[in-house]
Image 1 (tube, rainbow, N blue to C red):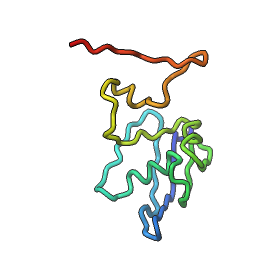
Image 2: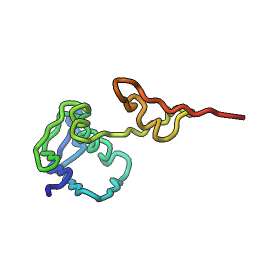
Image 3: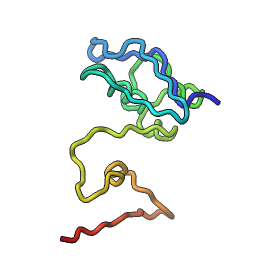
Image 4: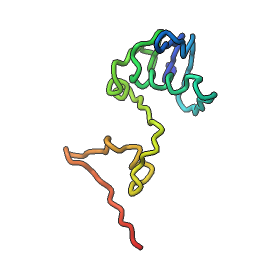
Length: 121
């Protein structure tokens, strides 16, 4: 079975300043990874490339053994890849899951499914 995701030789520059140089990452099914490093190390940039947000980069990405080059986050999502951005603007009335899926709520039979919760003082 092929690896879930393989990123090989990823490079990215912003205004001629190198941010990523020859970065490789392999994610196998069933594994959990932590991408750690100092501020400015390129962690977010690497994930934005994988998520189809940054489309101008060098290197190769394969999903399930097939080469891909996402032109948008929607294309990445079609392959099961989504980036959950670190945001401090949460909706306090929603659960953690509700905030994660905000804007991507599940639908059934064309209708939006909402989970309502009441706050009782």
